[in-house]
Image 1 (cartoon, rainbow, N blue to C red):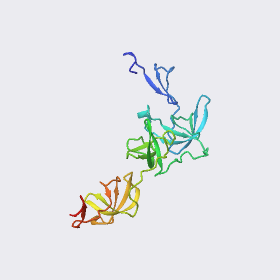
Image 2: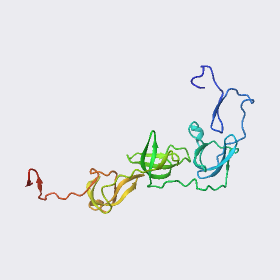
Image 3: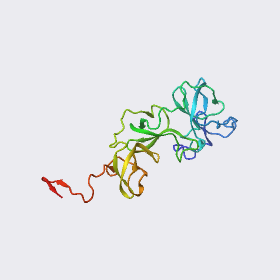
Length: 265
């Protein structure tokens, strides 16, 4: 029943056609609706090469399955059984049966399953009404809450620190970025002090743009002092509250301070 229908108006069935269109069936008789012997295709996985029949002329188009949703019936309004990346350059949702979806041995000129970007590549992502720059941190990403077998081409860490994912590997969703990454203050081999649970410890920068807990962080640092000597830690942000150059003076050193001229302090 639709909200705008009269109060007593009911329809026995809402039917999702294999084309993805929904229709209402107003009657229950065999003249209007009957059990079908055309089953849905369930045998394809991510990477399967298929052909799908589309359009009024019934042409077959080859492509590669890039998403599989085995539990699609639970969220049929927004989730198709398959998302197919067609060789002609577009990805489309497919409700496949044996009459409109079949395996194929056609090899694409450019392998459809080879993603355009690698981990670490700089990209721009379409976010609502604007493009935001970031860095690819994972390919074929899946997370808790996705339907079984569902994976998306990329997970991206935006320059503001947010983690998002790109549902398709298409230029209207994700593209190569021309925005340079922010330059870090320190280079490998430089001596620094970094903040850990026990306070500030001396260390050495060992790696830039390191991966830690699924994120890109500015620095990997080797601890050079205390009980943690030799351990590797990560600086989550590049600021003085997290990592800075060692202080030039130690407690007890005699120094001069510029305050209306130099004087002992």
